[in-house]
Length: 114
Length: 116
Image 1: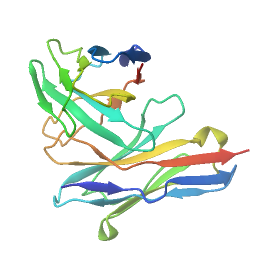
Image 2 (image 1 turned 45 degrees about the horizontal axis):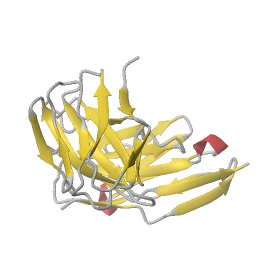
Image 3 (image 1 turned 90 degrees about the vertical axis):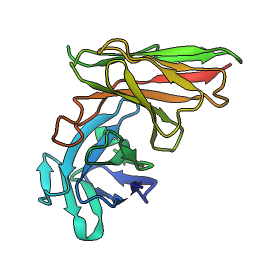
């Protein structure tokens, strides 16, 4: 069975600090997909990134970056120079090939203080 | 605008009552999903539908029912058999598998269900 672990429950930082969110996953499949979503206080989940297991290149999108390491089954997410608007719950999720189901981690609440 | 709409935003249920949560999408997506979110927890899959007139149980389907009569709509009924229905319910849709692996799921704004 697939499983996603986000060990950090809450992270609090001061504006402009960098923050890294950890995500560790378990799966028996060699082909799988990893996702990150942001849930602001409004509640709607906002898609951030989708990565397949064959693409281990790190990705940067503005202040967001992702570090995918198959050797440690991790897909970590870094927010550089955090802003108050980054305050949200962030979820990591896993889906195996040929499976519609997304398995979510418990989420990490990020609070950015001005 | 293309997107997913859920209504109502808040819903109150009395003991023994069935209530229905609405989910509509105009993204032309084949697949639709219902998730439940409890405080401090991740999302858990209730039901999903890959195509019209077909749906499958997720991990926590007991006490819930769905229908998929139209591609755009996937309503969820919380029945009286669901003893602890208070939660935040999120609907999502995706293009489906399409031979390229699971597509990204996009979410609606959610419905918060409270028991009176």
